[in-house]
View 1 (cartoon, helix red, strand yellow):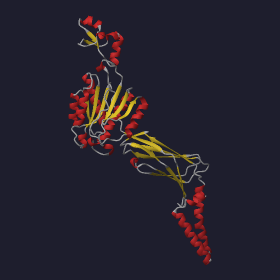
View 2 (view 1 turned 180 degrees about the horizontal axis):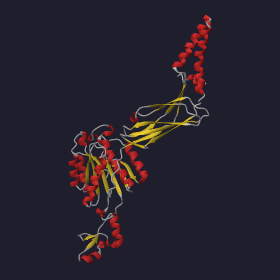
View 3 (view 1 turned 180 degrees about the vertical axis):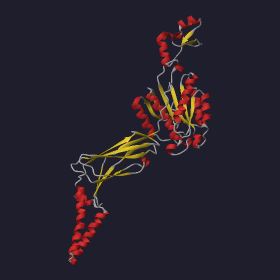
View 4 (view 1 turned 90 degrees about the horizontal axis):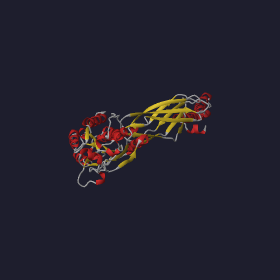
Length: 410
């Protein structure tokens, strides 16, 4: 009751002040009717406080965020469930949930009376305007009397984390085979048929170790043949993402930087769901995720990309592109073209796929058309396709690049 009286609103306090004034005036002037009015005015806030105090505020609250990871630039949904755990029904409840500015505005909802043991569900949208990790809450629930004279507020300590991640597009199930290295599924079948002694021989060259001579193949071809030093296909990949702020354009969720992150995230998730082990790195030399695989790796990659900050660097520092497969999600500029073209000749058998974001469409500084960058990278041995500003551009670019790969017979 004391807490309820402390929760008197400005209206309730004003009513008490008026009641006291009228009461004093009624006693001085001996006006009984005026005294009755004064008593009524004083009684109303007390009765309201009693009614509000009866709620006891034995309430529970639970939030559910859908989807669990909200893609930037999209709208998620929060379901808020309020449960009355007391033996009496509540009055009208006013809910106020704190929401970070990057996810929208603070939310206010009104719930009608909740029966004993019952619950009410309300929802509100989350506008994911910026990547990052945020906290929803704390939630405040205010019990209000019908006259607006008393408010009793309870604030819950619990908050709910929300992770805003780059947009992930579903990519086509293209088969990225290892046949260009003499390994992979096709090679495994061939080895099982003829034995490891016959593995991919080549002509003898001056300086080759004589212990590697393949005698059976040499006898059959009537010239010296040696076993090729093949590196097994390990299904390991590096996803390289260009986070150089000076080479990107646009702002917020629609910027070319976010589109580049979307391309990298889409490729990473696609590979992880197809059994690859990946590493995620940036063009300024940072290794965001040293190794990731399976569902746990997917969560780690998305969390890392949600929290990663852009780099002010212009120069490119390679983290080392040593894996079987390299997927580069990069801006379209001459410096990047030169860096990747030099890396394309890194060693025979490695496969590079470049998703080139057309930063010229975002009016980025020193940007060149994605078609020019893709042509130069193809000439250097990459499979490349441009990513435009269209909503499904990453999936289209992936299909173009991997379709070109299969069509080329690599």
